[in-house]
Length: 213
Length: 103
Image (cartoon, rainbow over all chains, first blue to last red; front, side, top):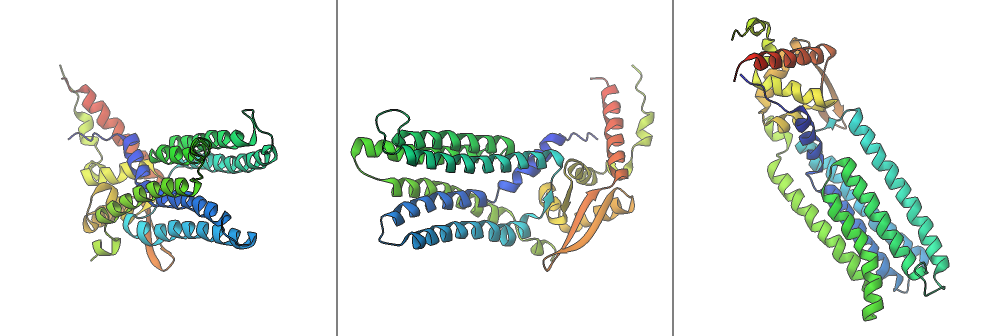
């Protein structure tokens, strides 16, 4: 008998199954849609604290969907797994990248705000933030996709990266502000992708209690 | 060409059974997993996996840790040192044997 098993492929298959539930896609889709909500709130006659409260509330909803989904849908159907040191190392690299990305994003946003009144050059407030946004998003999602071997993150990163420069370009060319719709549309695409994966996951994986009879 | 098949008699029969080999191979590449995860990854039934795990546990190759995650019972499985060593040795022997068989 030939026991022909590729151990690397076996480990990779086990690792990739972690993203089969689509919950991370749903979470990231909801986060991008929350940016659209934030843009809409900016145009409403609401106090700053109210706007902030609603926006944070939307982000909390996204987190609840992710964690409750993992707890009540994924784990009872797929089970639990702990990976080895190499995978943990890669996951920690991604955590560090996300942390750096948030810091860079915040720093650039403050810098862009201070440059906002100077116009004309490439580094004016109008273009500076979108440029940094694109680089930051492509870098963090690209490296995340690479280290986590989670290919859909490349698409998600592209949709995140596209949102702000697309808004700036449309504003410059057509003189209309579509930021709300751009964020909502990008987020919706990611959300639908995640829901499709979740539906397939629920169809393919039955709850463990059914197996035990 | 003479093929030395003597190592064949040394093959670990506990590992040689395909389903048990798959369980050990999976546990070899991860740190630990629960019953449900292994069952899904390998496409085994609950009863089938349960029977194999019992044999592997009795052989000292797999450690079974029963506990609770919240209110739900959870059985975590991992490879013991003995199991890891036995699996490596089995792979080595099989590789050697198959390499010696002419095309």
